[in-house]
Amino acid sequence: MAEVKNKQIILKHYINGSPKESDMLLVTSTSINLNLPEASNAVLLKNLYLSCDPYMRSRMTELVGSYIDSFTPGSVGLIS
Image 1 (cartoon, rainbow, N blue to C red):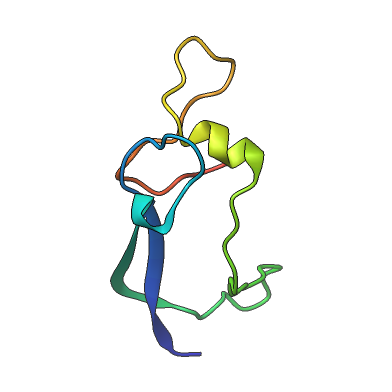
Image 2 (cartoon, rainbow, N blue to C red):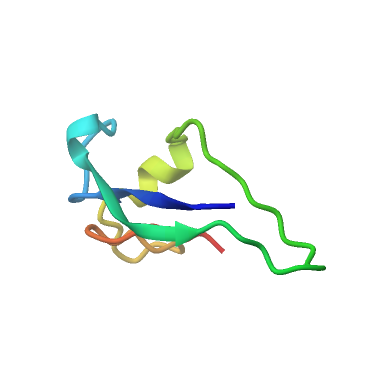
């Protein structure tokens, strides 16, 4: 496979109310290699849509003393 541009959706700042497109920033970063190691069980996926459910919306606000952490504005949100 080839190299492709890597697109990231970045949270600009904590939100008030429902998230809007203006709360996000589309960043096209350096290219990533799509080659998977041979004999690996890895799967390569392409995201076609992005949605924000109520759980994500609450993490886009500044939470203090909550059992979950807020997303950090200016970075890619990782959910483990």
